[in-house]
Length: 519
Image 1 (cartoon, one colour):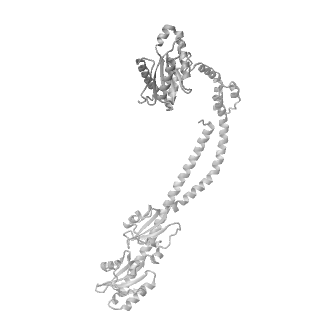
Image 2 (image 1 turned 180 degrees about the vertical axis):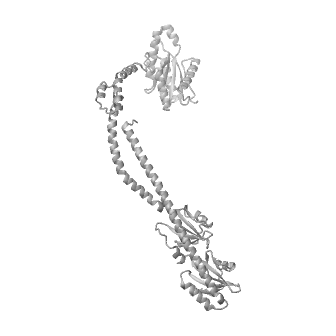
Image 3 (image 1 turned 90 degrees about the vertical axis):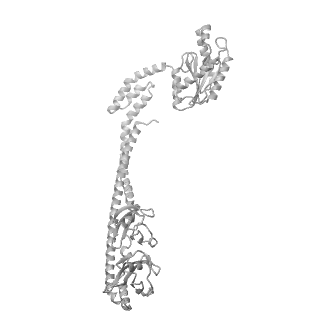
């Protein structure tokens, strides 16, 4: 395919413009994405730390409130049920800290509870959170557990001791994890409405708060961010969560409870402005680019027109009117002017050389067949194109006798006779060549060994039945070889055919011997 100079320059210019634009857009796109991710990471980190500090302060305040209450109810633990009930009602009603409040003695029996409609008084509080509080006898924020009412809760408790340091039980407030609670008020709804959310995990990697109640109590300990929270670390990172979603997450630990807060936003939501930025940049850049391309196209036409005209005349140099046409070309810049001069000065020399080349025929002057140089060109071209072909190498049997008995003139007539005989016998697409002396070579494109041998046999048998210029029939011997089965190099193929020809001679002449068709 021929590409004009004008189109080539236009392509290079367009490619340069598009490449520069693409690099600029891509660099801006990457920088924008990096900035968006960096800002989102920092925003979520700060927000997670804020929530963690708020929750930490709340939990410490709650423990302080429970401590004061424990000191208040300690004297009433030996039977003053009314005082105990007043205290738990006070704790429940004075704030929204707890969903329920209870006083439990050292055996696990519930002495007082608020709200009273739960009807838990005098029941044994045997859930894991209560058992843990009774066992450890210290301020405690429990892990999630199922209460005796069937709710998933956490309990914040404070031990009750008498003045003599006797352990009397504990006062505890519960927070419902799957119902409205103080955690909802503390953590609330996230500040984006694009799939962003906050969740809280305990030290085991269990979700204790999530905007979706179905996720509460899920184990997410395989999440890389949660693993860092379980080790008490805080920070921010891009992470694929346990549901396979790409998220931008900030996380912060809550040491007092061994909890952790995660504030995260989908990466797609964070990065969506970068796509809009690319669209805006493209819309802004396209008009000036199109105007520039129109100007470049007009300039290219002016620059390349003289070169195109000179190239056309150089390609069609056989036209006798070419010098006049070259003189009409408007060459207005240095390179075109010099090319114009060079074409004019070399016009006559070129035509002289063309005439010399035309005198060099590619045919054998005696037989009119292709000569050996043309034969080699055909063989090389067929081999280069990987076109399968066969060759027949043949010569006249006892040709020296023909020359000795009838003379060289009759011998030349015999060669011409054989050349004509070959052309009449072979296919139209076959290439007939004089290899040298009385040897001839036939190239048969797309002919397998069987077909080539058939043609050679036909040629041999017909020649043996036809009178030659000597007044008698001539006989020939032939060798047949196949490309690429026998050889992939033309010279090697000819050598193999020559060996087959030699075998035919040794076998008594007037024979055709073909190769085996395999290397």
